Image 1 (cartoon, rainbow, N blue to C red):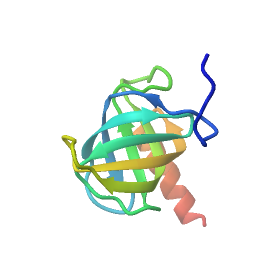
Image 2 (cartoon, rainbow, N blue to C red; image 1 turned 30 degrees about the vertical axis):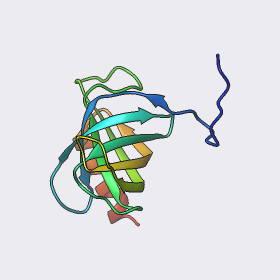
Image 3 (cartoon, one colour; image 1 turned 120 degrees about the vertical axis):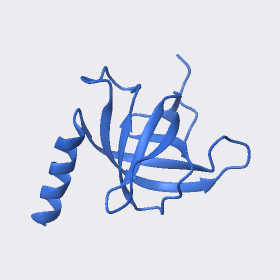
Length: 119
């Protein structure tokens, strides 16, 4: 096994899979594509710009982590960076930190709503 030469604790591994991403506070789900992942994050491309610090819901169709129960994995994540791309099918590349994982979007949404109401 090759050593991790990145400054990150966990190495990024390539993985291409369709995903949907949505700002928790507004908007609709937008389409995108994963580029790589690590234990705690993802890099994906999309046509929507997200400000760093924005909380987003992510649904990954072919998850790189474990076998999903219903064909998708759902995450609450925080945008860490979002940059315009030059030569890609999509306009932006966004890096996220994964906060919470769930096998159900409804469960994830209700958990997020509960945490907002109780804080």
